[in-house]
Image 1: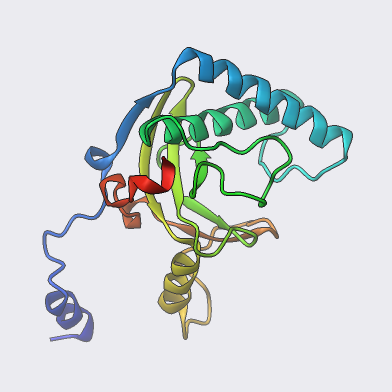
Image 2 (image 1 turned 30 degrees about the horizontal axis):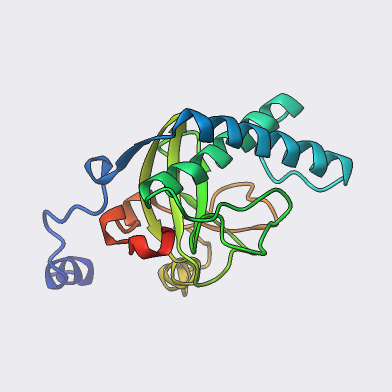
Length: 196
């Protein structure tokens, strides 16, 4: 019996399904928060351009960058709504000063097939919730803690000549690794006290 099959059997992986779409939580952002998300994101984009801050997104145009920022802010409000609607949501230009919503960060992806991108500057032990969807309808996909994700990716790739899991072609300098959405903890495992 080869080592991989022994390990597979020892860990009891046969039939094991990690976080999947049925674990996602649907959230509809109320209209007043939709408008607030648009206003906050628009101000943030204009102010960032005025201050010549680097845009770390893959968008090619000013309009695409603004739309991405609006969806990201909407995702933050979706997490706030899920948590009860009272958690603090960061204001423009508070990057990395506070978690995005209450005591968690939020990462939005347009494509629900994407994983969680961990950035080098992410707060190491602040949970990040991965969200997909479009205003006002979002899906909370799951969450993980950046320091643990980095450690897991490091251990998976340890000893390899070429890195595999957790790394994409043409990653940007501010990106640390990507974490599969199937490896995320489901939302029911996140303490809602963190977003109240």
